[in-house]
Length: 260
Image 1 (spheres, one colour):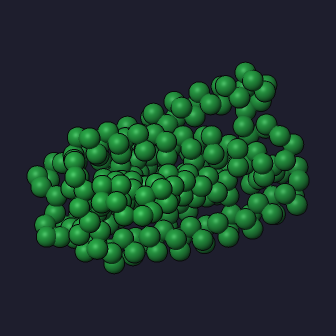
Image 2 (cartoon, helix red, strand yellow; image 1 turned 120 degrees about the vertical axis):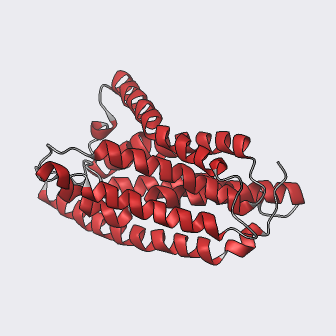
């Protein structure tokens, strides 16, 4: 029974992501992307992203060990700096960089015709990442594993949201470049920088980083826990704000064409 319970939160997270994504897919006007299998391609690509980003993170960590004689988790005497460095090189940059490359590959294959479809492809990559990551996180033998996953559950759409922003930024960049509208550079910066920055700050506060795991320094640990609470609340609000704004602006982004 305990082993089975470990699967429940992961399945709930995947089901919620699928529900949100399918609603977004069906919202496209005048009709959803056809044929349907075009949107399955980026989901499949997203499923391999955790494996690729893990390999890249191991490469970065190995490089730090060779260059500095320490991993990013122990690189400086400052726990906050180590948390940021580890979160950037092992998650924020590596995962979002891999997903960015996969979005570009998906765009080449799927050939989206409007800004909304760019954002939808980003969301699909994030959905695939979520599916595979939730599967990889399942450990029926880990004590408290199910509890940990339930704690993560409110942030179920994190990867989808990050890559919806990325896809939207890339789509708006392409649309502005093709139509001569101003702001192309701003949209590109938004699509590339915001997901990495948000992901890095979120991981530095809520994952097992030196800022949280500081048993030898109760003060640092206390600051880390407060920081984690603030970042978790901010992320929760932003996650649902992005989903709501994406839904609210459906018709507007569907009306912005992009030439293949």
